Figure 1 (cartoon, helix red, strand yellow):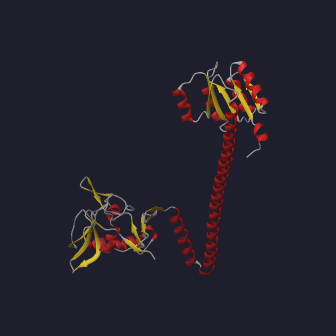
Figure 2 (cartoon, one colour):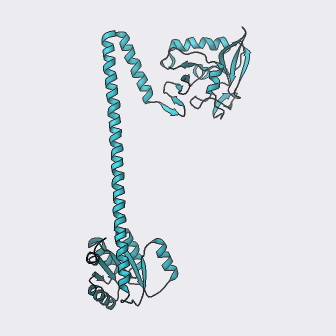
Figure 3 (cartoon, helix red, strand yellow):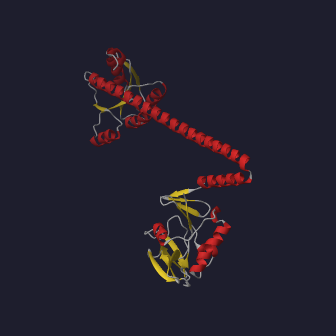
Length: 349
């Protein structure tokens, strides 16, 4: 807290359109040792506060030509929020006073005619409040500085993280170059696969436990199963006419290295059940209608309802999973229905 001498050095600005009030105010306050300045108009007061501050206390009449004191209070609140604002008025309007208090625009009200014998107490209270305002401002500025420092540290951490990733890639690249030098073409194939996997990671999208890649595959990260996001019907534009046709599709997709892999297989019923989403958020298309099905959210719309599984029943039948209802069924391997399909899977270590 400042000493009493320092406190009286704070600038006080008194505004009124009556010269005799200003003369008395200046005489009384200066005789008490205060640093007081007076002016006749709100416009001049705003200029003093903006360009010749800081002003600790503003005392202003309300009804003046050109601008009301309440308007001046609003301006000062914006341009010098630490300034303690006091309204003097001969017209006591309860509604006006409540509105100004609720907006936080005035700290005190003084009824006119002003009793200058009692004004010293108001000035001391205003100085106390001004010092509180200044301390609060310092605290807010400190918080802003801390926030700025925090953001700066976050940016530096992000830059450092990027450098670490770049360094790791360089180290990996050096290792790959060493492999290339030793193993020739085999090493070159390894390098190409490494680059492909890196690109897939960088362009992937995460949906809950699923990681979706831009090569029409998606990884169930919990069960370490990678699925085609498109099924037989979407890839081939038709449905498999039998279980054997679905089974032969495995060899075709591996020969084509769908998604860059050659180890696709037909799923088990249990694996289909793992991928099933009971919310039925996806759609299958049949006979000009869309039907809700329990594909995983990572899969594309528009496939079949029944999906052939590797599980055989006897020699002539096999199981399939019904995604419109979420349960398994058994049918002859020769079952020929446009609702049937198959989606391949591979195990990821």
